[in-house]
Length: 219
Image (cartoon, rainbow, N blue to C red; front, top):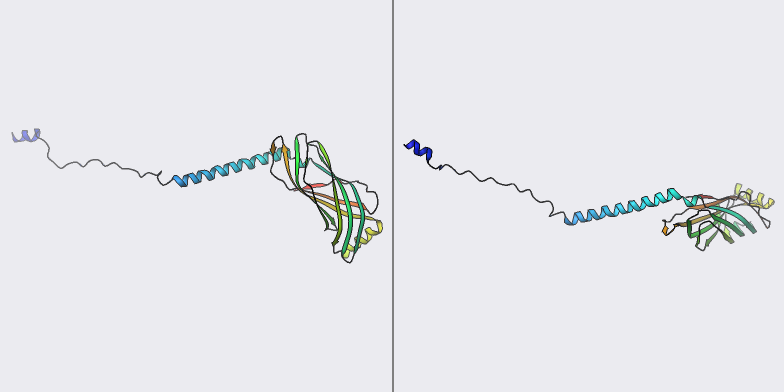
């Protein structure tokens, strides 16, 4: 009988502990400000990269400055005397710029002209900024006049005396530009090419024969 009651009676053994639930600590509470800054930086970098890519694509497709032609079409040299390491000069260039692009205009925001003799700069002139439309020809008048300290020694001095005898001087012209290109309403970033007009044989007080007067564009 006791066995029967033991089998049918309630169980009074030790209690089974309740199952504990594991709560993983949240990660969002400490992220707010840092995540926002990181996202903002990524957005800025992406925008800058897209802008740079757009400019590069436009430049590679159009490369408009490579199509623009610079020529020295006329030069007047009325004085070129060298004494006591001082060079007195009076010189004027006509430079023709041809923009053959059908849809691209050019903003010349800066035009600086420099004159060189035997690698030494003796003249400088800053020209007025201008806009050149598509399929347009513009003529720049560049004037150099004044006195400049120049040191000619050895071969350079021999070259000057030889050219003084012949009446033709080897003078180089350089244009330092800051330009933008315009296609419709879109303007590119600024570019800073240099235009070099070398091997110019310029007569003193005589007519200039253009000959090979095409200038080179460099970046």
